[in-house]
Image (cartoon, rainbow, N blue to C red):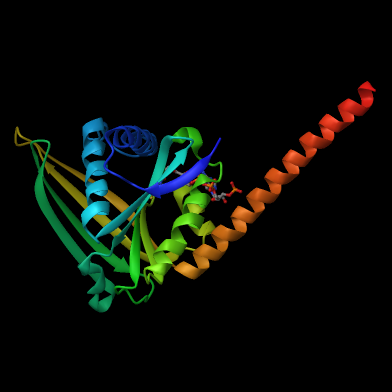
Amino acid sequence: MKVSISNLKNDPQIIEQLTTAYRNSYNTLSAGYKAPEEMALYTQDYFRQKVKRFAAENEKSSVSRTFVVFLDDRPVGFVRYSRIPEYYKQNPGGETRDLEHGMMDGYEYAWYRKVKFVDNVKLDDSTMILNQIYLDPSVQRLGLGTYILAQTLPKMKEKGVRNLILEYNAQNSNAEKFYRFFGFKALADTEDLDHILRKDNRTRFYISKVKMVHVPVEEAMAKANAKMDEIRRVKAQGLGRILIGLLQNKTARK
Ligand SMILES: CC(C)(COP(=O)(O)OP(=O)(O)OC[C@H]1O[C@@H](n2cnc3c(N)ncnc32)[C@H](O)[C@@H]1OP(=O)(O)O)[C@@H](O)C(=O)NCCC(=O)NCCS
């Protein structure tokens, strides 16, 4: 099976397959800690619109860059790097906040965020946010996440990116282990208040705790490369054992 990575393109078949992988990954993860009403918003079309937007951004904007990982010709996951939002750069007293308001699927929503920094890291244009990294559940924990970072971090470094930050839900302990493995350290704690005003005027609030972490690109790259070497060694040993086994069988049959 061949593993490869490339820029997300606006190809309808790739978009649809990647949408399914993204939805499977996100929904499997979130069902553990999100309310059923909130989960109902995460339809195939919700993810399709997002993936289409990522593809459009790849073609004609410098706001974000999305890379897709393929097993043979099948897209099984992606990573997306984006410019950091302006409000991160303004944090007098170690705090900042943001407010977003709009319509989604006929619902009015507001999103309010309070951010409390726990480390003093300079956030500027040499910092990018690793906004999303998602793999279909059927291919998680096989080293593909490491492969994605090992392949894409050098590309980001070439573009002048020195630091990475990212966010994850405080309850996503698997992602936390993955990020810690690559050297990410605490940057800020956030409290997100999702206020969803339904059409029938019933209002719902969802509060989620989100952790922000940071790492120098060089450090994450070194860890990803070391892990890829380890994966290759283990694979080679495995292959070696199979070959030895085959040879022994052949000898025994003589
Ligand atoms: C997070 C994710 C991208 C990691 O990719 P992956 O291919 O599964 O991870 P890898 O196999 O490359 O793991 C590398 C190392 O990270 C750590 N790690 C990764 N997943 C882990 C888990 N579930 N539990 C414990 N450690 C984990 C381990 O140290 C692992 O090395 P090891 O397998 O030799 O012990 C993938 O699991 C995923 O898509 N998860 C669901 C979506 C998600 O949570 N995305 C992040 C949202 S913020």
